[in-house]
Image (tube, rainbow, N blue to C red; front, side):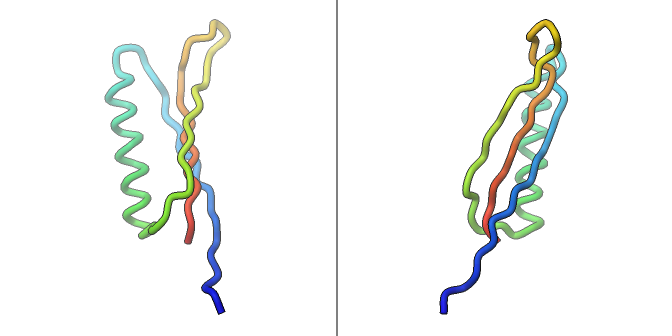
Length: 70
């Protein structure tokens, strides 16, 4: 019989500040990579990013959704 696989979703968020976005994105990448290593994730199904905005339309944050198989 085939091994049962479970699909899970993990959400990460970060604030984006003017002139610091590259560092914040790097930190977000590091957090996601640490999660993958710590949880010993073997297969990533998808990764999706969405920007959050303020009332003027300026990007103020990022939501990263990771779907993975266990």
